[in-house]
Image 1 (cartoon, one colour):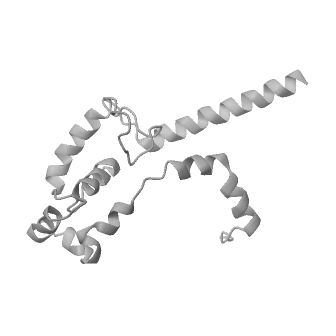
Image 2 (image 1 turned 120 degrees about the vertical axis):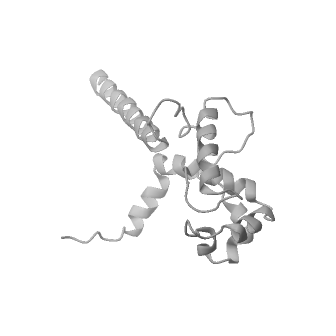
Image 3 (image 1 turned 180 degrees about the vertical axis):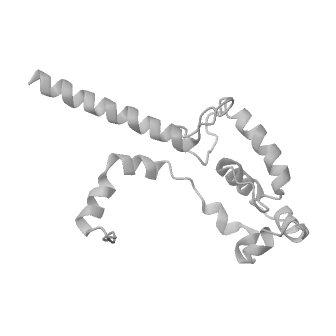
Length: 157
């Protein structure tokens, strides 16, 4: 078994200029809201109680949190149905997630912030395709376009 080596400085510099990296970097969600979260100094286990334990403490913290909506949105975008997020229990969030996914087909008003790049959003209604599949398909199309352009250029030469 071989060990992966650390990238060399020139490889990191080249990666930082790669258009794929730049697109991914631009699509990175703004997670600065987490610095305002009430839970940032609380033991994470509080938000993942056993099924036989009450979630009252976690829910109380969330209900007093100034960024509960952002937290819930992040959980819904990620499809996370474990633990307490944004003042919701896993059971509540499973129902919300079904509504969230059904609503993804409707267009967002201009200027609406999203945690997932528009290219990663997409219809999940009646589909098992995930945002990762959609992005992989988009990358394949872009690669095919680039290859097509390269081939067309070499045929003209």
